[in-house]
Image 1 (tube, rainbow, N blue to C red):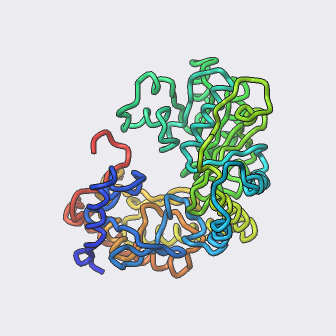
Image 2 (cartoon, one colour; image 1 turned 30 degrees about the vertical axis):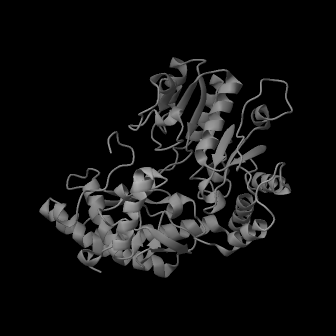
Image 3 (cartoon, rainbow, N blue to C red; image 1 turned 120 degrees about the horizontal axis):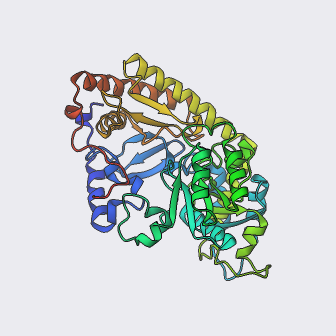
Length: 441
């Protein structure tokens, strides 16, 4: 379909309704219509497997499903059946449900490097609980986060470090310091500069590149030597690197780790896990000061925990992580070949682990470009591919990937024209897409 004929009138109207009622027009900034070409931000009606349909009736192959939360594809039968079994039994009680201990046992069997676990509904609560626990255990005020990772929490200790820091006191932000990924010397210098002040090192254990040899083990040694808590944010790496996350793949055990996203296949569930000595500080069986640790009304809804158990069973029994890697490798190879064939192989760059692919759009001078990203996304959408990233789900078929590669090839032909013209403006159709973290709307 030509992009000039690709109109989304119902989605456009729905977006206007959203903006009138919901700040930002979405409940997650990464889902905002500013992340898509002007007037080409589909509003979703429903999804099944690797496909979604918008309110205008268009079907898309979807990547990055639910911001990486739907690793098995939408409405996966094993997950929805487990959820349905709980719905008629009640979802929330005045005392713990037996499902809570079953879910904890299942999680700790899947992530055997942890000794205790507490569930919540979103990743931010889990990472902030980990930070609070680290501060309580060490008596230290500062948090050291990895500067190369884009997001840890909606809470002040992290958001104050971004361009969207409005409303956050400087005194709070001053307690957060940063270290670069992969650089042990720089991290040691930071720990020495703030000797006995840093409560924890928090990072994603792996990113769009593999950790350098010995890096994670080196961080473990630094944390031990300087008496701080090592926290792995496994929101993305959990179930995509291995069922037990990056810690299970690389064999380096953090003190605390946080999981979410793929854990519920779209249902709201996250987890804080870690060493008993630390986790029990939020419990009742110790003699020290109590830590207020993840006390949430909806943290243990039975149907979400049932979803998490079904997800873990499916991943283990069906080898889903291996499937994700195989699908991603097929997609990455196809996209790279298509880009190279159209003469834009240096400009459309696929990066990351096969199970967690992203793409960069570079201009004539090989600089990251929101304009070229806009051009590329417009052509993908017109071809029935919804892809803010190339993060795969296991529901994708070979035919889905073949179609995606064909659409990418068509998009790359336009990309080449824009590069030759040294101006992508005629192909944008409106304002360019924008980065999530920016100071002004």
